[in-house]
Image 1 (cartoon, rainbow, N blue to C red):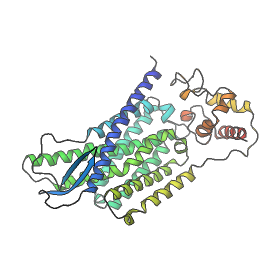
Image 2: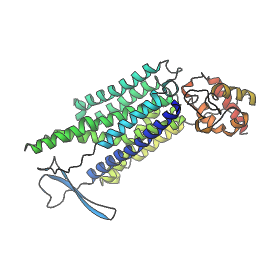
Image 3: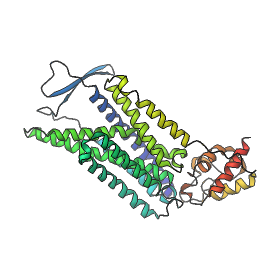
Image 4: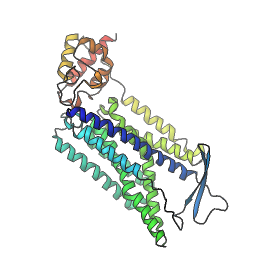
Length: 394
């Protein structure tokens, strides 16, 4: 069994597990925010109940109550929603190790961005994820945390600073996946370090016959809402490495800002709709998201290479043989592959014609390929390939 084969299976299994537990976490997050927003005060509610909701699903009717803090007594079979969040982070970090740490020179490091050795790149990764949580937590616990709009601006600025740093340290793929990991770490530790411990403190106070501290519940609610608004942006960051128009953009950190705006605005629209607010109070959120989307599309519009000098088939093939066929050949020379990625071979002119669109997307319009630009492909060579591909379309 080769290392590449074993790594592929680890990658597949961790990715599968990550998707499964991630769906569970996101699903419960969305459900409980929607539930919280749908609560209504009704006649004859029990003592201490803040509001109730009537729901129907799968042919059954449900009546849900939410307490201001908690009921006077708790059942032994109380359900805690926490493992979905914990396992989403654990499987995600395992994927980061298998995909990016094990293959740091290919996926994480780009010498044209910053010359690093794998150990340096990994150390920066771990330190930035831990440091990001610490700064975020201090912001929430500071006086800033009591001013919701100001806190939102500060958290946005924190993510943008991290995004700028990542894009000036790592390859395009490595940078945006780290933006996702940065946000995901904040979200997961919110659950592990704040939400669940505070709920346990409330439960312990009840068991001891004491009045729980309302501030504990308020703090947990604050972090839960943060997680809710960050969910849509983090999902896009996690799949960004499939889209070189994002990862290969020279100002991808600005695209992160637009993604944050789009995701937060769509989430706000859905939240206020679930809350039953008047449409006149939240209609503006979708146009704001649409404007951010248009700006992102304009920023990522493909460049035109059709006006250059004629390029021969031989010249184009020479470039791909030097920079692409190391991996994309029947017998790859790159140590990370036993077979050509996605079964794409780029060692004949016929195959260059066949995969012209993919070459344009991955190696011309962006620098997603070669991986980590290990072969040192220049901008002039990319432009030459772009000109050759444009010629074929005339």
